[in-house]
Length: 146
Image (cartoon, rainbow, N blue to C red; front, top):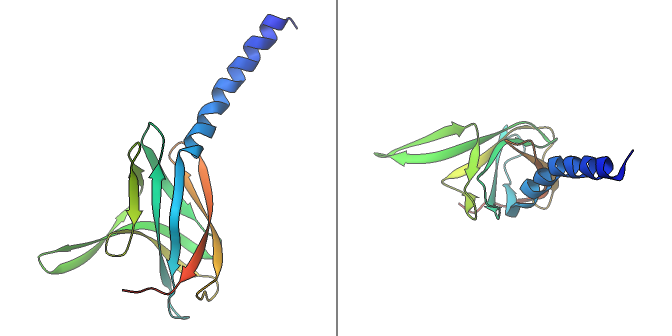
C-alpha cells in the first residue's frame, strides 16, 4: 500500500473518532448526589450540575444506574398554587452553559431501588447524549435538607 493511500486512510479514520472524544470531553458533572429516602421508598431523586464546555449544544437523552429499574428527567413547577411534575425526554445544555438539576426544579427521578441506600452509599450512573456519547459518574447518597 502506498504511503499516500495509507496517510489518507489514517486521516479519514481519525476524522470519525475525534468528534466523539470532543463531545464527551465537553461535559462535566459537579455536585452529584442522591437524596436519601426511607428504606421502603419506591422512588429517589438525584441532583447535579451539568456543564457544557463545548461549542455545541449537548442533549442528554438517557440516564442509567444498575441500582434502579428506571431513571427519568423531571421538572417540578408551581403555578397558581398548584405543584406539578413534568417528565422530560431530554435535557439540553447550551454551549458554555450549565443546567442545574436541583430541588424544586429539574431533577432526575430514580425508580424502584434494587436495594436500600443510605447516606454515604455510592452508585455508578451513566448519562448518554443524543450523539451516543456517554459520561459515567459516581454519585453519593446524602441526607436531603428540604
